[in-house]
Figure 1: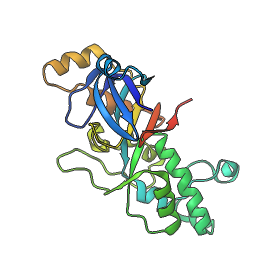
Figure 2: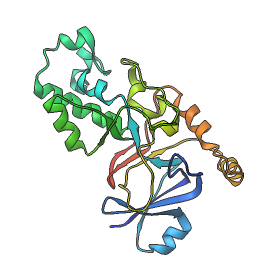
Figure 3: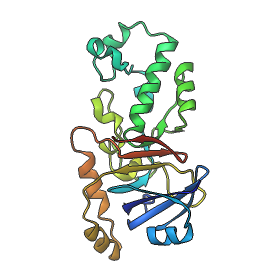
Figure 4: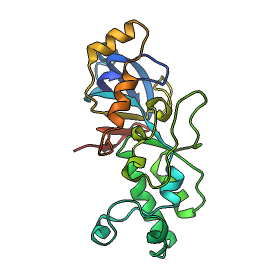
Amino acid sequence: MLTVHAAPVVQASATALPLPDGAVAVEDGRVVSVGPLADLTDQYPGARVRHWPGVLLPGLVNRSGHALLEEAYHPDPREADELGTLPLRGEALAALGMTEERWGAGARRGLQRMMSHGATAVSGPFHRPAVRTAVARSGLVVVPREAPPGVPARLPAPGEGPAELAPLAMGHPRSVLGGALAPGARADLAVFDVPVDRDAVVRAAEEGLNALWDVLSEYGSGAPARAATATVLGGRLVHRLR
């Protein structure tokens, strides 16, 4: 079924200007169309429409992927009293006596936490068989760790805590966009309930400026690490903030 995802502001790519009252039409895991919500609802009158708050972006890239999944263990919630809730590394990790089964289970939890922060792609490579399997089954795209040329970025240092699970906390927003929302592209979306001045964004766009990057940078730097309102992976809603 064709679904239209709508938001007060849509940022379709790293180079596009923000689209106010925008929407993305999705069908069979692919983007069908991007444009004003009014145009898309006229074009697809039978579509299901999901209205989201804030800003709708392409899915994000977590460039800490290798370190988070192959060099850290994400405890089961049932282990929280003993192990806590943050990724375990170093001596704490060595003391666990990790098995392939446990690596796989920890990776699955880590991937889910990444998706809860808007990630639809993750940096590799992955060498542990159980981790590779978990990543493949998750549907997340595996990408190089480096940001695209010319895009400001800050690669995460190992052990930065919860922030490294949240791409928006790890660098300039342009550096963590996983691609572009365009017809034919895989439907990977992230929504954040960013308190954005829509009118200010529109005025800046009329002058060829993008006022959204500063808003997203400030939002991403807030504490605690920002969770996404929703994450759509290949057209599937894989996370929704309750």
